[in-house]
Image (tube, rainbow, N blue to C red; front, side):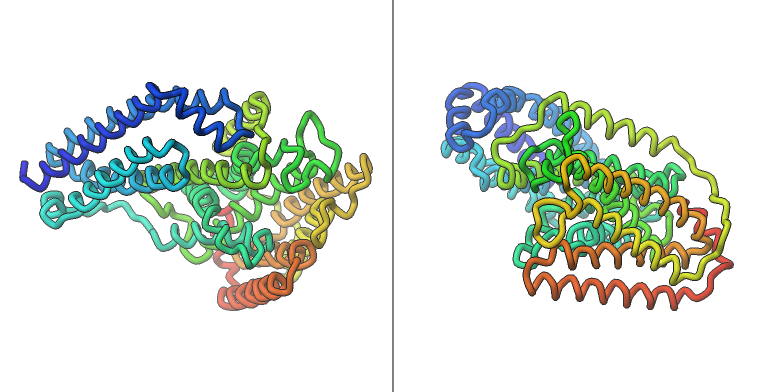
Length: 467
């Protein structure tokens, strides 16, 4: 073992030791740490805070086992262990830095975090030295990957879901950074899993529903919160569930957060997997951390004092798991084509259907309630929206005979949902200009892409790969 590698091993052991010390201090001085956190966040449940502190040694124990295993592999000269150390050092530094900046622990414990950061910074420098890199030369991996396509999807998902509808005002554009991990990581993970298991559009849509349950239900708690976004006033609540908000968002996430961004990227880069196994795992970890990020950022600021009942959280988690299982098992055969409509008709139909679906349930122009909210009468537009979504899906499947038709359906839906954003979300002149620009770019880019593809009926088999 060379001196450079020995330095890396020493810093790994030092990092682990400081982590163990920090965990032990939170246990020994449990009362003082809990009092500090309660003083900072009096609205939080003290039992939940206490449970978090008591369970902290568990992940530290897991990390300790992983550290020992990685260190042994590193000493043995395993190249994968070297890559894992590089990843762990950066992720660990970011995690500790977040805890330090958020001031979740008293000042004397933050001093320990400063030591953690110093050790991790030294580890990052040591493990990236040329002498260490030369000791672990990269071994070419014959398995294909497309990081450019993966990166494009990571960016496309939050832009389509949040920006192109106008959910995020222009003066708060920086907020989209908080949504990139969950949207981008989630869309990428779902795409890789569905394509590896031979699924198509139906499977993407089901996975999108599961995604919506996780983001809206478990991360934002918006499906059950009586206060967040005024969703409780959209329609009568059922068993503590914001019915109208749940309907519109589960459909919206399935279509615009997951399926359309994936299909748009695949029109350019194809339907083959973009990542290797390690990349898929990383995408899953990023999505999970992204869910945790918006959980600690959005609800405390937008909905202080509300915590989802444990039973509701369990039901939503079980429902999400059930939908994932269904998405992995369901296989939808080719649709019977009963009419080959012109491409503009397909685009116009999806645009109108999208606008109408959102208009039935979503509030207009800064209003806190949808246009059709009148007590129990609001159940009628909800039923109409559900029928419209089903009929649109059934019809489009039978109209889409070529990749060009499928692209037209996506472009039309995007144009329709941005048009609704112009009426429903543009509160300022700057927001209006932004959404007009998005609409023009969407239509212009869509028309250009459709013309470039031309009449590609010979590629109709490519549509079946998406079904």
